[in-house]
Image (cartoon, rainbow, N blue to C red):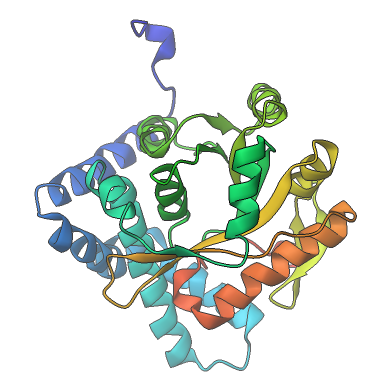
Length: 296
């Protein structure tokens, strides 16, 4: 269907300019070979984009809140590595088809893999829970090159100009992808009821979520993944993509399924799972998020 004027994204002049600058950075980086492009954009984000956007300061503030015993130099160093990883992730997601092809070579393992294979064979719906750790799209890409068909649920970007091509990067990894909101949720549910597979990131602030401790601090957390898992008898399984030492590849791990009980307990189990990953590789989590808003 041809685009119309009404299809064009709407936003402020500042949004438009920000999008143009980001497109320029990304477009310039894409001229480089993949193995050079990813670390180069990581370094650019660490040294230029992150400081200009205030990402480093926000990451340091979150680290001080969660781990107050960490000294200031250690916080600054970790925040810089967080920004670098975030830049690498962004560039990876804008590097299809190379990223998708590379994902097919990533190792896939974990105690939950047999249950995932069984769900695929029987047509049982699957809700994979993960967080902004490593690169969650690496996990989806690997699974979708391995005979699975994982869609996703996303929160639209505030910048509508950037959101337009951001969604395209997700669709390149696998459709369908659903925006949060009434229409997206209804489509999401139809997909799930038909035996579909979806990945949900559960580590963002949810205004109407339950207060659940995350890294030792209270955080409002959505229980929707567990709610839908119970309602539609979906397998709920934690899935992670952890960046390996070379910097360009990931280990994709499927943890044991979370047993059905009640939504809060299941969400707490998913949260504990993610905490373990963050504590092992803190630089790979997106500390830039405004995750903790309870009591701050």
